[in-house]
Every structure is written in C-alpha cells, then in structure tokens.
Image (cartoon, rainbow, N blue to C red; front, side, top):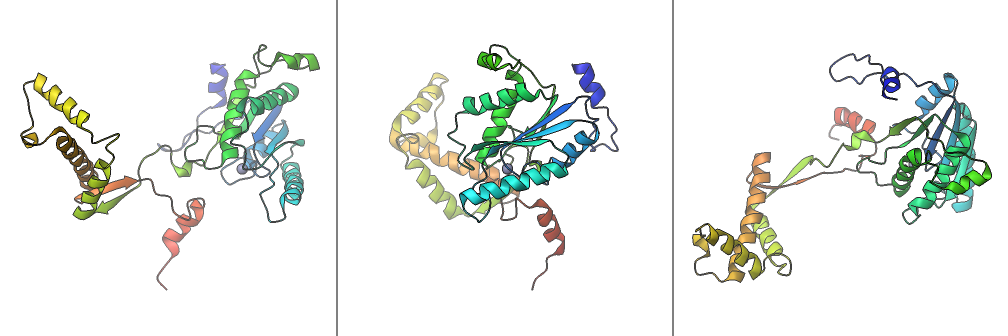
Length: 305
Ligand SMILES: [Zn+2]
C-alpha cells in the first residue's frame, strides 16, 4: 500500500514552501461523506477535486448527513427541500451520480450517537464500495460546527472499520461485504491555524495584574490553601532550604503569597515576550475570521473616512 501511495503522491514542488502535487489514485468510485448540502462546494474544498475525479473516470456519490433545515430563511421544511434540490443540482454540475440524505437535524448533531452515525456510513461504504472517501478533517482545529466535527469523526472511523467483518456483521444478511476504501482526502479550514498558538498579547498595567492576583488567590478551595504552602515548605526543608519571605507568615498567608508570585511571574513572562512589562496571550478571532480572502483585501485596501 505504501508503494502505491508514494507513486500516487509523486512530487513536483516549485519551491521550498510549495506543496507536492498529488496525482489521483486509480479507482472507480469516490464518495464524499459530508454533513451539509453545500460542503462539497466550499472555498476550502472540494468541488474541484470531485470534478477532477469525475474527469478521470470515477463514479461520484454525495452523502449529506443533515437535513439542512436551518440553512436559509424559509422555515425548516422548506429550507430542507430547497437545500436538497440545490445540492442535487450542484452535484450534477460536478458530474456526481447521486445525493444520499441521512436527514439528521442540522446543527443539533452533538447528541447523535457516534456509533449510530458511523454504522450508517459503514453501511453506505459497503454498499457503494468506494476506492476514495472525501470529507472534513476530524482533527481540524477551531471547527465550531457540531455537524462538521461529528460527521468527520464518524467518517474517519467508518473508513477503516467498514473493512472488518466483525463490525456490523448484520450487514452480511442484506448482501453486503466488508470493504475498506484505500484513500482518504480530508479538507479543513487551515487558515484558522494548525494548533492553539497565541496570535496576540494584551498588555496589562500594574493595577490589572494586582487584581488578577487577588482574584486568583480568592479560590481557596483549589489554589491558595494552607496545605499547598505546607507542602512547599516541607519539600524545601528536606533540602535544608527555606524562603525568607515566609518568615512570620502562617501557612494560609504563605499560600496566598505563592499564588501572587505565580500570577506576577506569568504576567511578566508574557509581557517580556511582547516587549512590555505585563501581558496575557490569546488566540484572537475577529469578525472577519471566516472570510480570509476579505481580510487579506481589507488589509491592503481600507483607509480612514
Ligand atoms: Zn457544512
């Protein structure tokens, strides 16, 4: 399998940062397993890839896991009907064969049992026997949409589990056989970031840091309690060490002092990294976060009125 994959992803990089260009694998059937009516057409995938699979001889199927009732302004039932019709039209334009709707309630997929959704996808994989599966990356960061998260997880699990005969053996009774697709293409909003790396520091003044210290040590049940100070004093005593500043303080007062040091220290560390005295770091999301193209345009093209 690895030899095949290496051949498939034959590299043609144009620079140090360029991604290698992948060839499409040989096969007959591709299935997109997605939550919504429009997920096969979004800016970050995968209309172009589907069109190319079709051009290279694949049969393509679209699974829409939700009923899309909340996408639109027409009320639930009408939204569902319109969105399904538009999904069918869009898949036809891409050369796909069929839309299969599972009709789970749009945006309320959090409580849907993962195993149940996965079982449906396993059944469809065994029925259509795709060589390639397309969908959202279940390990994508900052994905707010519960349908995207849950369908992606179920899809990634179904992808490999559909190949095991002991998984849902009842499918054999309706004439289906285990089947594992060889290839998986996962789309994600990578412009949202690859992990939780802070993108801004917020400067704090001395008074704000002092209030932060006081608020923190107020939580005596979990932080600034006498036992924590006793523990530190005992550990230092075992090494014949002590903290002069603890002299004259009881364990409760020493515990508060420890937490104040901690809050002061972290505020100074973050401040130093940002070139100021005190700061806190955050991953900040602005009002145009979902429109990276617009953000790039605005960065270059706005001016004061
Ligand atoms: Zn979606």
